[in-house]
Length: 161
Image (cartoon, rainbow, N blue to C red; front, side, top):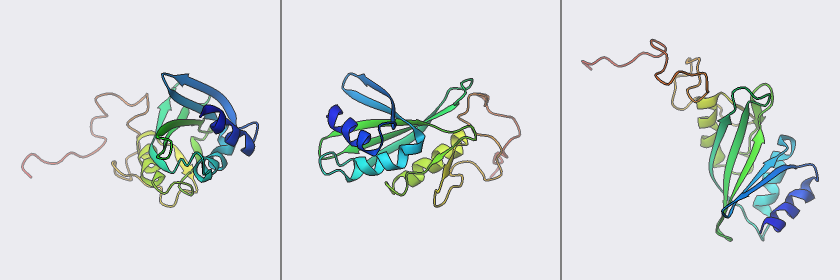
């Protein structure tokens, strides 16, 4: 399985794979973000692999690293009953290409990641906040956001309402 996945990715570009991790049957592949959409398209459209389902998109905030955010894509092949984790670092402006052109289901996951981490997805059809008000200036899952929140940063409902 791993060999076939890597073959498909290497057909996109030999420079696409930056890192490979295997742990207890899970496969994670860190990609060069330049090739993210092309690799996603290849993995979805390949008849043998058929990674047609995106299950989640989230991010890791490394806080003090040069590439602060790593975006994590969990994709699934029904045909193989296999989960694959793709990872790619956002650039210095906290931006990365959207994969909504490959998996329409990525729309909401990318919006959620934007809302919670502030990572912008280039070419996203409707990138706006989901949970927090549009005018909210913070991103709650970033490392610098206080655990107890910022008092007065968002109006709370009255107890009488």
